[in-house]
Amino acid sequence: MGIAQLLSLAGGLGLFLLGMTQMSEGIEKAAGEKLRKILEMFTTNRVMGMVVGVVFTGIIQSSSACTTMVVSFVNSGLMNLYQAAGVIFGANIGTTITGQLVSFNLSRYAPLFLLGGVVATMFSKNQKVKKIGDVVVGFGVLFMGIAMMSSAMESMKESGQIVEILQGLTNPLIAILVGTLLTAIVQSSSVTVSIVLLMAQQGLFNDCNICLYIILGCNIGACATALIASLAGNKEAKRAALIHLLFNIIGTILMFIVLQLAMDYVSAFIHSFSADDGRFVANAHTLFKMVQVLVLLPFSGLIVKLTCLLVPGKDQKVGYLDTFQLKYIGDRVLLNPSTAVVNGLKELERMASLADDNLNRAMNALVTLDEEDIQKVYEMEKNIDFLSHAITHYLVKINQSTLPIEDLQGLGALFHVVGDIERIGDHAENIADMAVRRKETGVEFSEEAQQELAGMLELVNAMLERSLKIIPGTGSAASIDQAMSELYELENKVDAKEKELQQNHIDRLTDQNCTPEAGMLFSDVASGLERVADHALNIAMYITRGDHEESTKEVQRTAG
Image (cartoon, rainbow, N blue to C red; front, side, top):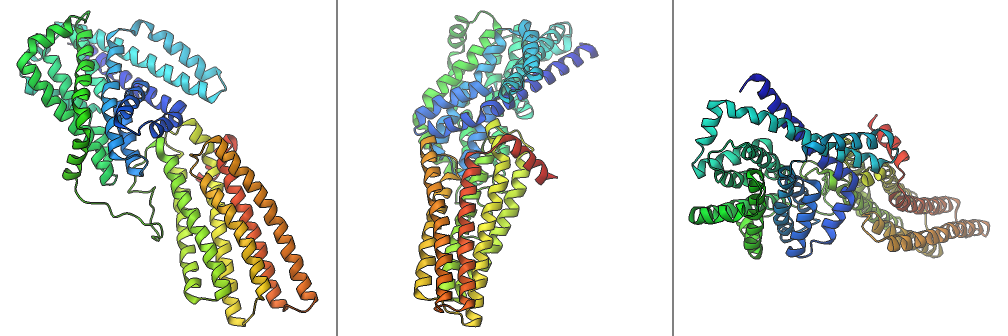
């Protein structure tokens, strides 16, 4: 085999990998948000989770991507290990679809896919059409790579050394090891199984049955991606990745025993519905995975428990009130594009809850003049500022990754949400400052003034409560519309209340029932609460009406 053939083989492999990556990323960009919601909604039991795993992986053409996403979901608390097990099992079936496509030899249509994808990408202004064009281009590039590899492999027959090595591969354990190592390096069982399939089509193996052992090894090697990704996650994430590994190791042992006992029967059965050796490899891969899932799915609970034994203990969880720590984002949490914005929203929700609590603590301190409450307000404000900077940095960071279109369109709006939450925290600090002034100067609030402020705070708290429910972005359209309608109504009530309080304040000053110093503090607090209500409404509006153009400008401005 000459240098030209080696270069052609390497180039074909490069195109194959590029096509796989572009297809997977393109699909995640175009439909990642919808696929994520499907994962969240339909994984309530292991059977449904398995079906979702098959469909999901079949669509994005990558079990590694699916499993890594599941690991990220588990890490973020969006999915438990029992739900994850079903999806991971299904992903192992879905990943065999790539081999089936390759075995049908669609390379002759690759130029058409390339042309169609390029036209959609270059001439369409619709972002979704462009992303679909990227997927089609990836599909075309993938099969161009297959054509190049297939052509290069034809010349392998002329190389006595290569043929001797491949035909000398007769030991089943070595074949499994070869498949494992190659897949761990490439990090895609679809790639290695496809290469084995192409080699089988060219008749490079002395006995095609050895391919069955190689693909068993490929399945174990495919676990490398999720295992590597889980290293940055918590114990639950590591257990989720371990479910994938244990499934493939146990499944490989079972199939190895079956092949050792009945290779002739298994081989004859698969050959009976396979037109050639390439189809034989693809069908064997699919059949093995289906058998493994059917046998192991009833025992998925035991596999989950085994992972808990292998990875014992619990993570030190970040509490709701823990200061200067991130719970849902940061170095201790996996960064996966499909769940990146979801994690950011959960951290935002936590920050907003802290700001809400701090506002109420400050209002209580304004009345009671409790020194401990005042100091807690100042301490929590520092934590809110820390979260503001950390979340902003995170949003800039995830903008540089491959986000789904829907997530990208709303990303810039989240910068405004961070700002509004931070301003609520500032108003709480301002009220704490007023409490300090009251304490130092001995200014008194009348019982009537205290009741008026309490009534206004109740309205503001109702607004903040509804805004907090909207922040996760997981509600139905009807529930969000209802919440927004209530927010607008409450905002009008707050505005009217603020005008009423300001007039009452003027009346008390006129009747000399209030000192000027107390009146100024009262007026400032009422104005501050009205601005908090505005921020609560802003938060809900940005979450529900994120604009792509505005978002992009905000990301660029913040990043710059």
